[in-house]
Image 1 (cartoon, helix red, strand yellow):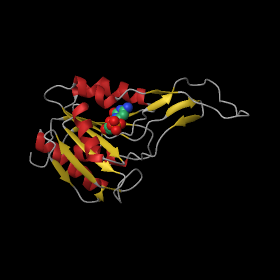
Image 2 (cartoon, helix red, strand yellow):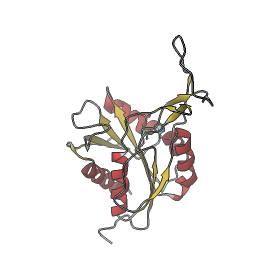
Image 3 (cartoon, rainbow, N blue to C red):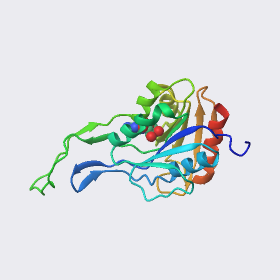
Length: 218
Ligand code: C5P
C-alpha cells in the first residue's frame, strides 16, 4: 500500500522527560513536554507501523491508536525499552532521559535543615547506547541530540558512538526550537554524515520529515 509504507513494521518511540526520585515527594526532572515524541509516534502509526510509545510523565495525548507504556524514571524506561526492542524494526529515542539520579532515595520526606543540603548523584543508564550495542542489521535506530554549542560535531560524534542510523539535531540556539514549543528546527545526519537542514516547522511537520528520512534508509 502506497499510503502505508510501514505496514507490517513495528516501531518503538520514547517521549517526554524522566523523573528521578529524591524522596517520596520530590524528584529531579526536566522541561520536556513529550510533544515531539508523541508526534513521531502518531506519524509512524499514520504510515502503517504498529507503534509502542514509551512515555515519561507527560500530559500529551496520541491522535492515533498506539500501544502506550507509561514510565517514570530512566531505569523504568530502560526496562520497558529492552523488554520490546528485539521485536521492533524502527526505534526513535526522543525522550529527554535524566543523565543523573540521586544515589539514594530517601524513604521519608527529607526535612528542611539549618544549612545547605548536598545531594549525591549517580549516572543513569544510557538507554540509546545500550540499544545501539545490541542492534541487529534489520533494525533502524534513531537518536536525538539537543546541543547548545558545537552542535554538529557533537551530533556526529553521538551518531557514531551510539551506533545510530540517523541522528536528529535540535539546537537550542535556533529560534522556534525546543522543549515546550509547538515548533522545532532540526538537522538530520545519516551514517554517511550527510546533512539535511530543515526550516522551523510545527512538530507534526517535523515528525513527517523525520519519518521520511527513516523511510529513505529502510
Ligand atoms: O548523549 P545524549 O543524552 O545527548 O543523547 C541524547 C539521545 O540519547 C536522545 O536520543 C535520548 O533519548 C537518548 N538518551 C537515552 N538514555 C539516556 C540519555 C539519553 O536513551 N540516559
